[in-house]
Length: 200
Image (cartoon, rainbow, N blue to C red; front, side, top):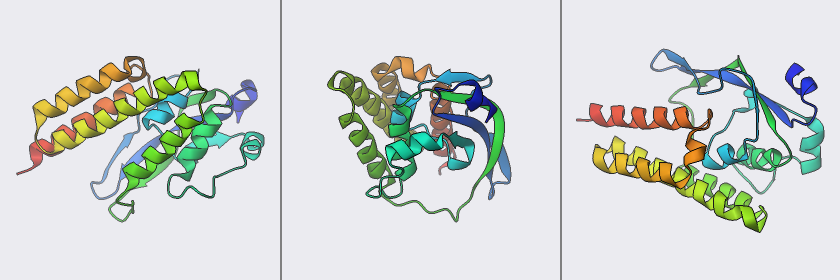
């Protein structure tokens, strides 16, 4: 609340979260800023970054102006709202950990989650001014290459995975330097390689 009071044009404030992996009895701080920042997060959201609901404080007036969640969007409705919200103004990122997020085997995700997320991202790109769409498409190419790199690393195709990751970095190099994206992508790729190495 204090962050939003101090930044009247910010549409939301986002704190850090602690991820608790129940089955592994292991916890870690999710990738997030170490110092308070004010940022435009649209590109990061378009790439795939997100903050779960308990991390966020969003201005009610802005959500009402946007009409709230899109009733036509299922599963990814929070992501769809965030993409519209981020075009209205900057977000204040706070370093404090504000919630614990439990990750466990009982959580359900649809088999077509990637496709649903892609549809939401493509709709957000179509809503952009024409001059901005090319960058939006480049960001989605980068995200797709990173996902393919993860799949390759998990499948023990390490050279292919590294090549795909390098191609992804070339699509949107500035984005991967973001404090929200760079370390997150590196962590994802490292985890995929570790899982690949452990496969028999």
